[in-house]
Image (cartoon, rainbow, N blue to C red):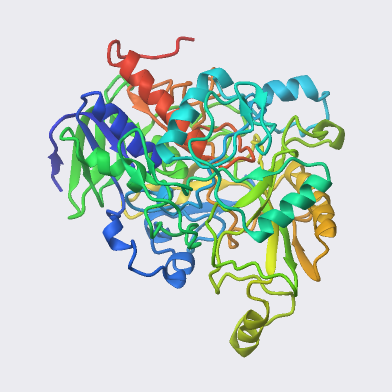
Length: 589
């Protein structure tokens, strides 16, 4: 098959989710010709917005706006001695597919990490005596200070119309917000979403126990918002269709609502869908890229030449493309040499479901990020060293949806048929949750590489995940079980159920947890232990930039989207201000 060569561009962007759309608009507004290639289909609001109905079975069960395992399979194993097997059905995580990526179907919790999360290795070195933590743990600092990254959080939050309550404004602690958050240069752009009954009950119980609850920071906007790109986002109407759904009401910040309308009006930007990038092509010296090879919708092999290559797909697939293209040395967990594939991390969830006969929670009036949370149990805010563990969790009560298929019912209720219908009739609207979203550390033998057995339709090896729970994360789960148990006792429900990982738990790929996968091509100060520098630039191939969750050296308890937006915007500015004037490494070592 002959290869079709496309017209040369300044920048080719591979993946058009949050990172890809932000990179595209920032570089196109600077005057560069930008061509984006998206593996999946186009995703237009005409396809799913009101008055079209939200279909729980199509979106939440059948994953209508996600990629499929057939198109994007990975293989998974627990240890280096196991044989990995390919995913046949999404379970623990569900990557997005098409324009908007996972930013189209995300829940919309837009929260920052803390300054301690940013400098976790520094915190460990200061707070933990030798021998307390597992010797195979490999946490790292992010390669920037809070003062460097904070303006980019602020910019991304204004792009999204972040709604919430400020807790720390330029060092002054304010009532009602998170007292543990890093200093903000500006208040939240918009006030918090309205509270629901479960939020009020949770916040009152948490305060009685000495915690500091605050409204969930939200990208479902509480008021009409016009962002810095000129895009308008409509106020949330609390329909509850957020997580796994495109927003029906143009109210949740996404690449579509916050970026794409303005981006598509720029004459120097173009994009192609159903364009599967399979390789970055390097020059003979391996120090720069020529462009990318992709398969178009008609099955043609195409070459897109470009002066700058941006890999901005989902975290797993950014790492996969780097490995397939020879960008950076693959990581070896035995020798600990190499950088691409190291420091993969997932996370664990858990919590309690509480049932009240006399409470009516009206769960059909909610937004995905509706809720209250507290950050008292995160690194540096509680005695992790005394407990012999590293990490933490945001603990929250979030009324996210009233969809019937996903409604929690008391233990013993049949899972289907007449008994399930009777249980749903009796208990719908009578339950609330107290939940945890945890951190996850990185380890020597938890990593990503190319599978030696299974290949995709193009004959390329699939990406292989080697991952299982470690004792540190399981100890954290057991500690959090006690914290949540105290809140449950304070709330005094008629009955409740608990879901926490036991100390002998193995990773269960079949049950949904989150899509917050991180690591594999991490940012850092040292090219021996990181694939990217602080500007998301490959240490080895200087005109390749890789924004996404892949850059995180471990997973913190805050949702990743705010940080992905911030590091992408910081990198885009560095390209505009410095790289274009003097192409080459932006960080010298």
